[in-house]
Length: 143
Ligand code: ADP
Ligand code: MG
Image (cartoon, rainbow, N blue to C red; front, side):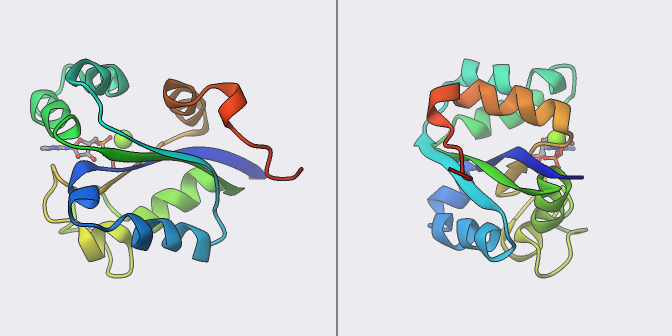
C-alpha cells in the first residue's frame, strides 16, 4: 500500500468516441490525481514496444494495429494503492465480464477495443510511466 503512481491510457476507441473528459473525471472522483497527461498518436513500432510483453500472444498484431490506429491519451495517476485501485476503476479486460460502473463495463465495446489500459503491477507501472514520460515531465503533486 502507500502512495503509488500508475500508467493509464485512454485507447483510440475512447478518444474517437469523445470520452476523454468522462474517463479522466472518473479517476479524479475516485481520488486518483493526474500528475501528467498528453495526447499522442503511437506509431506501430511504438505500440509494439509498449506491448512487448505480449509479443508472442495471438492477438499481438490486432492489438498493436488498433493501438496505433488513432490518438491515445496517456496519463500518470497517483494515489493510495494506485495500481490496483486504477485496475478496479477500469474493470475486467473483457467488457462482457466488467461490472457496470467500471469504465470497461460502461463504455467498452469489445475485448480488443476495451477503451482503457492500466499497469498491472508496481514494477510494470514504473517501466510503463518511463516509456512515455521523462522525469522532468512528472510533477511532484505534494509540492
Ligand atoms: P489488460 O489490458 O486488462 O491488462 P491484458 O494485459 O491481458 O489485459 O491484454 C492487453 C490487451 O490486449 C487487452 O486490454 C485487450 O485490448 C487485448 N487483448 C487481450 N486478450 C485479447 C484477445 N483474446 N483478443 C484480442 N485482444 C485481446
Ligand atoms: Mg495488461
